[in-house]
Image (cartoon, rainbow, N blue to C red; front, side, top):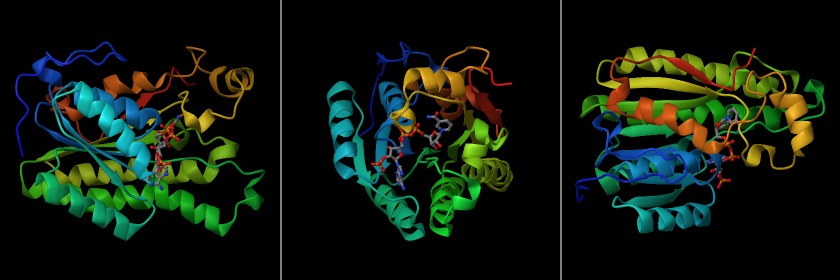
Length: 269
Ligand SMILES: NC(=O)c1ccc[n+]([C@@H]2O[C@H](COP(=O)([O-])OP(=O)(O)OC[C@H]3O[C@@H](n4cnc5c(N)ncnc54)[C@H](OP(=O)(O)O)[C@@H]3O)[C@@H](O)[C@H]2O)c1
């Protein structure tokens, strides 16, 4: 694989530059699940702006391809779109295989794909919905960490970032199964941090409400009343506001940090 050289890219969305060696990702291979939209897309753009080769994985290949095209036009690194349903153990294995086949390594894995389907009441949660929520938010990240984290530890090391949720520590009634899955993801973060040390660092970002497709159907008034009102900052996060924490964990800036659970939530009580 060609190495990307001298990189000083700017990410227009975040205004951050790649010139600082602490946050530089030149030539690194970064895999982002759920990279096509929302927080994933903001992170993909930021990693690419700092010189990384990015693997953009989600179920809809066309969406990944469209973002890869944008990235390739704007930055020097490679952008590789892959279709993958993270709910499925064997699809996670296929994703790992195809990325190692293409790049020979992964330096940063971001387990970002996730969602929180709504339901009218807890007794209306079906076994199918429950299994789906656990598969997407917990099982898939486990398998990817087991496969890719182990390979990282056997090679040059790396960094794993799990996108968890404020719900994992503040489980609101409308998010109970999802909150349990994300609490499990926090536990996986601390467990894998121990197992994969010292070469691989594993950390989690506990996101509060961010204005992404997750809330696409909500009118702003309802959103602020229900989700943002209790927050000290009284507003939802913008997708690019996840970038600072993601760059921190991805790069040398966080070299003494593993097993951490960092809240990026606008000041939740
Ligand atoms: N937004 C928030 O307020 C918030 C709060 C706390 C935590 N989080 C967490 O942050 C992460 C990103 O959320 P977001 O708000 O950016 O979500 P989003 O805008 O809905 O984007 C979700 C991304 O995940 C992909 N995806 C969904 N199901 C998938 C599956 N089964 N396999 C592979 N990819 C899948 C989607 O693409 P496809 O449809 O093409 O698959 C998309 O790229 C999630 O883990 C979420 O739980 C978000």
